[in-house]
Image (tube, rainbow, N blue to C red; front, side, top):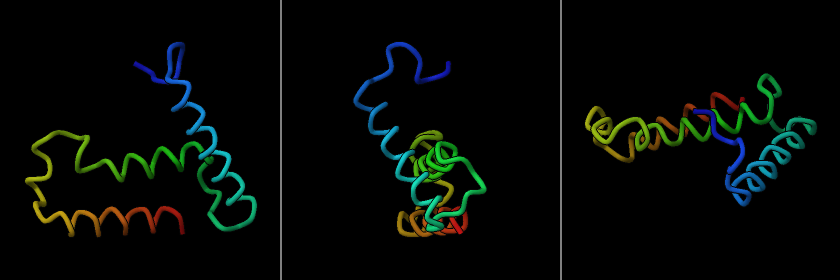
Length: 82
């Protein structure tokens, strides 16, 4: 059930490693808060962004306005990184 083990997509793994390294550099420079490790911060942002598409296909019915969903996602990520 845990992704990233043997057989993980090498291209995706490389991209993830690059993103984690970029977040680590931004944290070291003080551009991003360091209250979460870089990989955790990346995962949280990705999952927040996917909330309306990944949970289940019916979930967007709870908030049908796509612009409003986008605004909530942007606000949540902004709060996470400040």
